[in-house]
Image: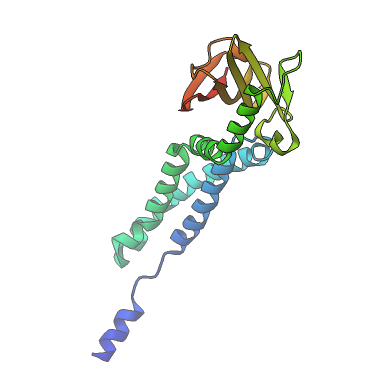
Length: 212
């Protein structure tokens, strides 16, 4: 009986080395992909883009290796033999289908919401006044709210006020950010020189917008 137990322990399937490598590789690739979609190209995109693309090629190679690995390990248990394939295919599904950009954007907005509202109130109360250019340089404590060197843009239409906080700006008409309007109406084409291709309401008065 003791000999039987010893024999069972001796031949108990161990965690496949290919599966272990695939697990760590998948964690790193998912992390790099998440950084790539933070919406901050100056911090993540320059190094993350080529790294993520190269790692995706390696992931495809790992999936093929996992397929060839199956028949050589099947005699020790199909579940263990298929584990590397499951891990690698799961990683591929995550990096291709999970909306990292949307998740980052939503988390960023919720985290900064109180400061966005504080600035909007300061503009409406006249504590912050736009210059002739229509922009306002925010107080130092709030400059992180806009990627336009700490500047927001303001437009007025009678008693209605619109404010734009940039999260990204690559060209005069190629930008993204949060749009505030005092009457809660969505942005119209041409507001802040935008050609809106994406507008989603975050809550009353607030929208996330992407131009061109």
